[in-house]
Length: 115
Figure 1 (cartoon, one colour):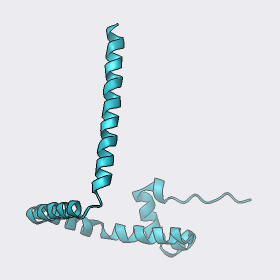
Figure 2 (figure 1 turned 180 degrees about the vertical axis):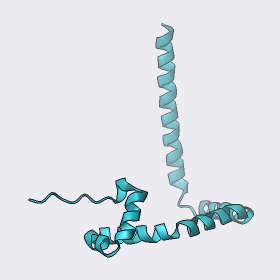
Figure 3 (figure 1 turned 90 degrees about the vertical axis):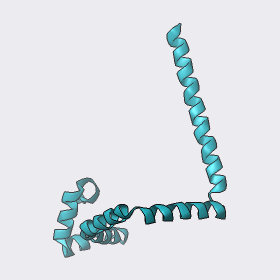
């Protein structure tokens, strides 16, 4: 009997949590496009950015450390979007090899089997 009551309370709490999340999402959707809400967010972000120089430095260091990766990834995605991926692989085999080693699931191109 206790386990049945316990299961009911868990189910009830789960439903209440989902309803609360849904209600909060609706509230957010209603106020997110208002100018005063946007202004408050911008002010809070600006305050955080100005008062945390170590955060800015960390972001800058991360950018400089990964700049080459970002550029090569952008080139790969551009050629992929234009359906010219074999041309990218032929033109920059070292970049393609690096990307495949970096994230094989995303960048390895499977070549179709010959007929």
